[in-house]
Length: 165
Image (cartoon, rainbow, N blue to C red; front, side):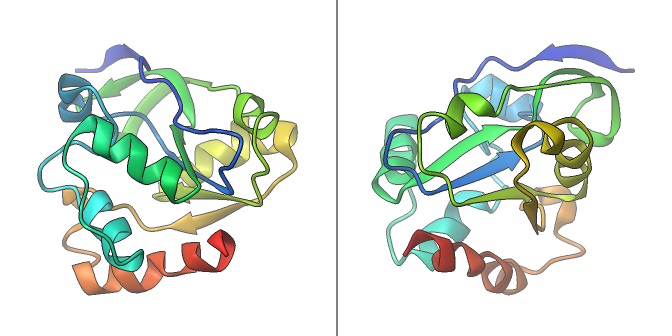
Protein backbone atom coordinates (compact mmCIF):
# COMPACT_ATOMS: atom_id res chain seq x y z
CA UNK A 1 0.00 0.00 0.00
CA UNK A 2 1.25 3.46 -0.88
CA UNK A 3 1.63 6.11 1.77
CA UNK A 4 2.08 9.86 1.37
CA UNK A 5 5.60 10.88 2.38
CA UNK A 6 6.87 14.41 2.94
CA UNK A 7 10.62 15.00 2.80
CA UNK A 8 11.80 16.41 6.12
CA UNK A 9 15.60 16.59 5.70
CA UNK A 10 17.23 19.87 4.87
CA UNK A 11 19.62 19.87 1.93
CA UNK A 12 23.29 19.71 2.90
CA UNK A 13 25.29 22.42 1.15
CA UNK A 14 27.26 25.59 1.68
CA UNK A 15 28.81 28.30 -0.45
CA UNK A 16 31.75 26.02 -1.33
CA UNK A 17 29.90 22.99 -2.66
CA UNK A 18 30.86 22.07 -6.21
CA UNK A 19 28.61 19.13 -7.01
CA UNK A 20 25.05 18.19 -6.11
CA UNK A 21 24.00 14.58 -5.60
CA UNK A 22 20.26 13.96 -5.74
CA UNK A 23 18.48 10.80 -4.66
CA UNK A 24 14.76 10.23 -5.09
CA UNK A 25 13.23 10.30 -1.58
CA UNK A 26 14.61 9.09 1.77
CA UNK A 27 13.82 5.44 2.45
CA UNK A 28 11.80 4.44 5.52
CA UNK A 29 15.07 3.46 7.27
CA UNK A 30 16.66 6.81 6.42
CA UNK A 31 13.59 8.67 7.69
CA UNK A 32 13.69 6.58 10.86
CA UNK A 33 17.39 7.38 11.37
CA UNK A 34 17.06 11.05 10.42
CA UNK A 35 19.50 11.29 7.54
CA UNK A 36 20.21 10.36 3.94
CA UNK A 37 21.31 6.84 2.92
CA UNK A 38 20.95 5.44 6.44
CA UNK A 39 19.96 1.86 5.64
CA UNK A 40 22.79 -0.29 7.05
CA UNK A 41 23.21 -2.11 3.72
CA UNK A 42 23.21 1.04 1.59
CA UNK A 43 26.67 1.46 0.12
CA UNK A 44 26.58 5.24 -0.48
CA UNK A 45 28.81 6.39 2.41
CA UNK A 46 31.34 3.57 2.01
CA UNK A 47 31.69 4.28 -1.70
CA UNK A 48 32.17 8.03 -1.25
CA UNK A 49 34.70 7.43 1.52
CA UNK A 50 36.62 4.97 -0.65
CA UNK A 51 36.83 7.18 -3.74
CA UNK A 52 37.87 10.14 -1.57
CA UNK A 53 40.37 8.00 0.42
CA UNK A 54 38.79 8.86 3.76
CA UNK A 55 37.21 7.06 6.68
CA UNK A 56 33.53 6.21 6.32
CA UNK A 57 31.46 8.72 8.30
CA UNK A 58 29.14 7.11 10.86
CA UNK A 59 27.09 9.77 12.67
CA UNK A 60 24.84 12.38 11.10
CA UNK A 61 27.31 15.10 12.09
CA UNK A 62 30.24 13.17 10.61
CA UNK A 63 28.28 12.69 7.38
CA UNK A 64 27.38 16.38 7.15
CA UNK A 65 30.99 17.39 7.80
CA UNK A 66 32.23 14.81 5.30
CA UNK A 67 29.98 16.24 2.58
CA UNK A 68 30.85 19.88 3.26
CA UNK A 69 34.58 19.22 3.67
CA UNK A 70 34.54 17.50 0.27
CA UNK A 71 32.39 20.20 -1.41
CA UNK A 72 29.42 17.89 -1.98
CA UNK A 73 25.80 19.02 -1.71
CA UNK A 74 23.21 16.33 -1.00
CA UNK A 75 19.43 16.39 -1.34
CA UNK A 76 16.62 14.57 -3.09
CA UNK A 77 14.62 15.28 -6.21
CA UNK A 78 11.29 14.97 -4.42
CA UNK A 79 9.69 17.06 -1.70
CA UNK A 80 6.74 14.69 -1.43
CA UNK A 81 5.13 11.68 -3.10
CA UNK A 82 3.02 8.61 -2.48
CA UNK A 83 5.32 5.60 -2.19
CA UNK A 84 5.16 1.98 -1.09
CA UNK A 85 8.03 1.43 1.38
CA UNK A 86 11.31 2.21 -0.38
CA UNK A 87 10.12 1.15 -3.84
CA UNK A 88 10.93 4.06 -6.17
CA UNK A 89 8.96 2.35 -8.93
CA UNK A 90 5.78 2.73 -6.88
CA UNK A 91 6.04 6.54 -6.71
CA UNK A 92 2.86 8.44 -7.55
CA UNK A 93 1.97 12.13 -7.25
CA UNK A 94 5.57 13.38 -7.13
CA UNK A 95 6.25 16.98 -6.12
CA UNK A 96 9.80 18.19 -6.77
CA UNK A 97 12.07 20.09 -4.42
CA UNK A 98 13.14 23.56 -5.50
CA UNK A 99 16.71 22.81 -6.57
CA UNK A 100 17.37 26.54 -7.10
CA UNK A 101 17.78 26.82 -3.32
CA UNK A 102 21.15 25.14 -3.71
CA UNK A 103 22.04 26.46 -7.16
CA UNK A 104 21.64 30.06 -6.02
CA UNK A 105 23.81 29.52 -2.94
CA UNK A 106 26.72 27.49 -4.33
CA UNK A 107 28.88 27.25 -7.46
CA UNK A 108 27.51 23.85 -8.50
CA UNK A 109 29.27 22.61 -11.64
CA UNK A 110 27.52 19.23 -11.92
CA UNK A 111 24.33 17.52 -10.77
CA UNK A 112 24.33 13.76 -10.25
CA UNK A 113 21.22 11.62 -9.82
CA UNK A 114 21.43 8.29 -8.03
CA UNK A 115 19.30 5.65 -9.69
CA UNK A 116 17.04 5.48 -12.70
CA UNK A 117 13.97 6.89 -10.94
CA UNK A 118 15.83 9.91 -9.54
CA UNK A 119 17.18 10.58 -13.04
CA UNK A 120 13.76 10.23 -14.63
CA UNK A 121 12.08 12.48 -12.05
CA UNK A 122 14.83 15.09 -12.29
CA UNK A 123 14.49 15.25 -16.08
CA UNK A 124 10.71 15.53 -15.86
CA UNK A 125 10.30 17.91 -12.92
CA UNK A 126 13.57 19.84 -12.44
CA UNK A 127 15.63 20.11 -15.62
CA UNK A 128 13.37 22.70 -17.24
CA UNK A 129 14.02 24.98 -14.23
CA UNK A 130 17.75 24.35 -13.81
CA UNK A 131 18.86 23.82 -17.43
CA UNK A 132 21.62 21.62 -16.01
CA UNK A 133 21.55 18.04 -17.28
CA UNK A 134 22.03 15.42 -14.60
CA UNK A 135 24.71 12.76 -14.72
CA UNK A 136 23.38 9.29 -13.92
CA UNK A 137 24.92 7.23 -11.15
CA UNK A 138 23.67 3.74 -10.27
CA UNK A 139 21.73 3.37 -7.05
CA UNK A 140 23.70 2.31 -3.96
CA UNK A 141 20.55 0.81 -2.44
CA UNK A 142 20.61 -2.74 -1.09
CA UNK A 143 17.86 -3.48 -3.65
CA UNK A 144 20.47 -2.85 -6.38
CA UNK A 145 23.03 -5.36 -5.04
CA UNK A 146 22.10 -7.92 -7.70
CA UNK A 147 22.79 -5.47 -10.52
CA UNK A 148 25.91 -3.71 -9.25
CA UNK A 149 28.71 -5.21 -7.24
CA UNK A 150 30.45 -2.90 -4.79
CA UNK A 151 33.54 -2.67 -7.03
CA UNK A 152 31.37 -1.69 -10.01
CA UNK A 153 29.74 1.11 -8.01
CA UNK A 154 33.12 2.41 -6.88
CA UNK A 155 34.23 2.52 -10.51
CA UNK A 156 31.04 4.37 -11.57
CA UNK A 157 31.28 6.89 -8.71
CA UNK A 158 34.89 7.79 -9.62
CA UNK A 159 33.39 10.37 -12.03
CA UNK A 160 32.64 12.58 -9.03
CA UNK A 161 36.37 13.22 -8.65
CA UNK A 162 36.51 14.96 -12.06
CA UNK A 163 34.06 17.60 -10.84
CA UNK A 164 35.53 18.03 -7.36
CA UNK A 165 38.93 19.24 -8.60
